[in-house]
Amino acid sequence: MTSVVPKTSRSRNKSANATKSRGFNFQSLTLRSARILVPHFPDILSARTDHSERQAIRKGIQLLGGLFFLSFVCAQAQQTQRFALLRETEASLLRQMYPKSGPNRFEGGWQPTSSQIEALETNLPHISELHNGGNPKGQGITHPETYYRQYLPVVRAGKKLIYVNAICDAKYIPDWRTHFAAVMDGGPCFWQAWYDPSNGTFAELTVNGRA
View: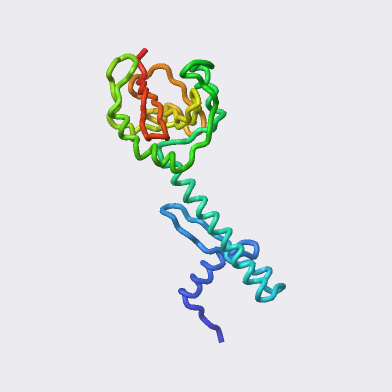
């Protein structure tokens, strides 16, 4: 007698087989349009290990899957934020713009805490209260939060400051998240300022001129 497998059962079996690869079952996690397959349990080890070992393997693999998922979410969040904390090595160009002695002397870099960067972001709208010290005189930046911003921690004359280097459109500087961008012209599309973490204030706004 020929048995007939219901279509629903065949589709479930087909789906289950589709998620098997080299002896591993996978759990599927969906984040918006991204579909992530996380290893669930290695069938090839189930016959060779006792219950406690299988439980340890299961927990270990699920933990690795969770860490992978978390790192993916963090990477996605980093790509959407409009600021980047640059490495100290990126200060070489900035070092050339400031003297080695005197009240504005450049002395090196430092590493700010996450709370100090958060405070900078919170105080960012206060930049709109500043006026350009160069030409054209008096020009300001109305919405500094809409710019793409590079943060470069610098020790200037013994004081820990953060140099803010802003770009209106990331398409002009594709690698702005990793490399310091020194732009001479461009008008209000580019501006710079200094942030003092000790009191949460900005100073010395400089808006680029036009060629």
